Length: 225
Image (cartoon, rainbow, N blue to C red; front, side):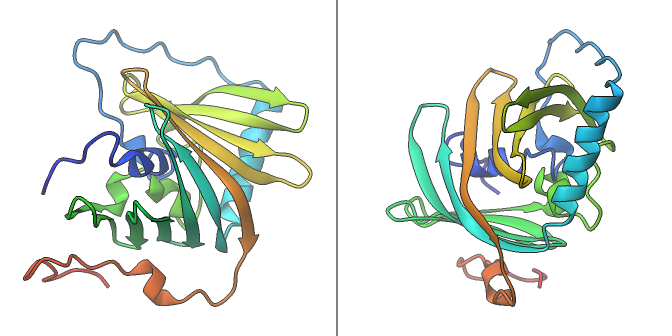
């Protein structure tokens, strides 16, 4: 399997790093000093973490639009579909045409322009936490900072198993509660931002949206579903 390029796979690196799938999927930087353990959250901050967990856990079938900005400042956009537990689709608009699809078992990434196809176990990506039946932001994830805004709040977290790997920030609007964006800061300080421009409840999404097969001959033996 080819090693994903950090820019080419930036949505995967961002979506898969929602801490949500996660394990955050962030690699530890060799030789880095151990990250200091975060101080326990204040009760008011923990209440916001619990509120975010409950909100994310309530996103059953959704569809919307996103705009991504990669570490070089390049932007792209597309459609997103969620069907929890386990299923998600991020479809980039032309000319990219890239697809990132979780079928409940694996996350597949197809780039038609580069003619590449990569597949990862869902449980080893950040999407696993986000797509889990029960969303937990207190299991395998350290919430290191809670930031309040006039119209919402943000949670910054890192993978507790790889605390030097980087961090993810989830931003929520308030009244009504809505996931507004997430940004990933890598161990090298590169930031990928995914802003959700619309998100609405859906019903009866086509199961085919969450199937992405490797187009290369003989590569789908034993694939799910």
